[in-house]
Length: 308
Image (tube, rainbow, N blue to C red; front, side, top):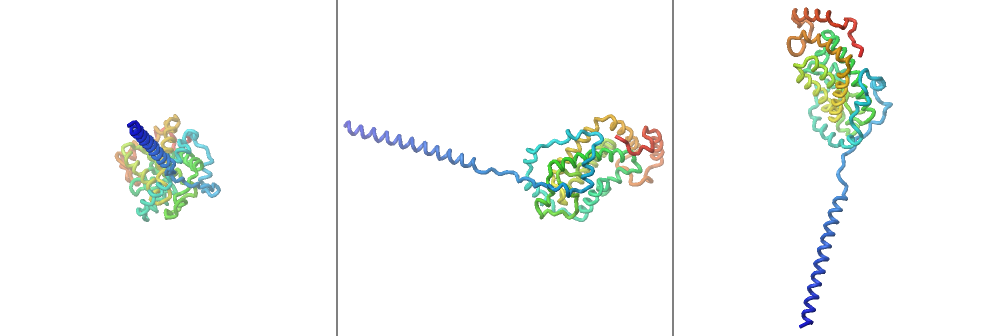
């Protein structure tokens, strides 16, 4: 009897040990699988390529970038660091441009070419270029003021291009080869997008009732560069951010605020909406008021280009 009891106890102990070993092995296998999964390479963003060749830059851009701004402190404009750039996925950005490629047409190409020549040639209100909206004949002080602050945003953008040195879309993927030429310079951030956004900000100050129209115009300038394949969408996002920071800084300067109050006189004669195409389209009353208020302005006719 004692022998049977001993055998039974021995078997029980053996089963317990076997079960315990099995649990431990199962735990170790599961733990190993978990560790193995965690150790697998995690998907990473595809890095952007560098433009790298500063000597090949457009000479005009290099000249502008070497100048000093009138009003802004460049050290406070840049808002990104390398960790932010590392999070930008070139493959994802390229795919977005490929999806936009079917929208290319002669009208888009012509608009991009005009914009590359001058932001004032860019279609801004429908098919009307910015030059037509902010004509130097009707609005000499407003036009000159925009030219002055564009100087600062151009320098800021060019310095950021040099800092981040991101290649154009076609340098990442030849299938996105643009059908129009663009400036020989890094892609990020977009100069046309920054210029257009700054124009929108000033025009909104001068003509707030048409702020939504000007916002659409500025966004259209940026979007056309994406469709044409000359810029990534991220180029325009950061460009708008730079333009906003530049305008915020300038708007705190008393000299700018004084000039802004003075140029607003040019817009007070407008009875409605977007200004007419030609001077002849003013009513006699508008022309008389324009002449009167121009004569009363603190700025003399000779001082068309304000010095900031």
